[in-house]
View (cartoon, rainbow, N blue to C red):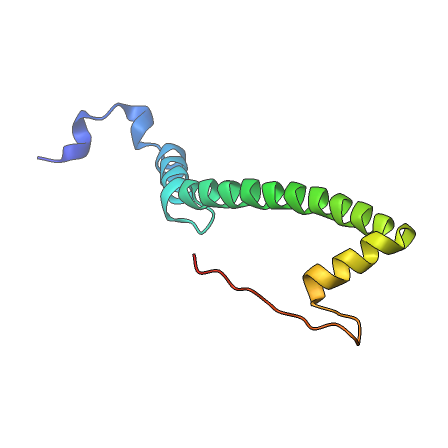
Amino acid sequence: MNPFTKLPKFMKSFYVLFGSFFLIWMVFVDSNDIGSQIKLTQKLNGLKAQKAYYKAKKVEVLKDREELNTNKELLEKFARENYLMKKPSEDLYVVVTED
């Protein structure tokens, strides 16, 4: 007994068979299937979040840079704290704490 005898006539059509095959291929097998698209969308959202973070950081750094260029005392404090700079007549001691 042929299993295709119980199917309606339109289901035996070449176009329906080819269309259903094409749909299954595009949804599950193709390199751009639904799973890949979901992963790429999640990655895109993560990259957009990183972009927003770095834009905010850039604004903060530019603000700090402008402050350092205008205020000499703040520039000296920044250099001493971050780059361990000192005057020739000073001794510098670095205290490292264990966390």
